[in-house]
Amino acid sequence: MTTDPVADYLTRIRNAIKANHRVVDIPASNLKKEMTKVLHEKGYILNYKFEDDKSAPGNIKIALKYHPVTKVPAIRKLERASKPGLRKYASTKHMPRVLNGLGVAILSTSKGVMANKDAKKEHIGGEVLCYVY
Image (cartoon, rainbow, N blue to C red; front, side, top):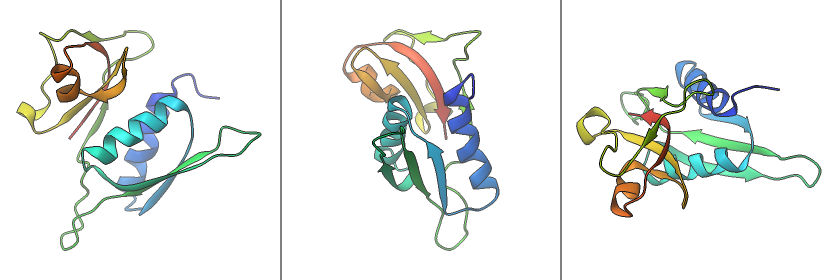
């Protein structure tokens, strides 16, 4: 059992990218499922599949995205922002800009998990989970 499931999720994806894997299996939770949907919407992963068991939470299979010719991964860096020991929150006025707007910050808001640009459009803030670029 991990004490920080979001950090474990990001580390599994980061390790799979460094090893040039095409697919990575991650233990599922509702937060991880929503983060996976945001990564897919923003074009950082190719596809995903939720394998739910009735007895256990299940798994998430994520197909990682690489450039077809150069084999460079779509995700250059995954960085955990808010940690269990130090939570980071952002209001609408102080929404983080990742790589001058080219990257994405994933936030946990009162309306669910969403990207920083979507949260700014809806005028809500929340906990900054991670930065992706």
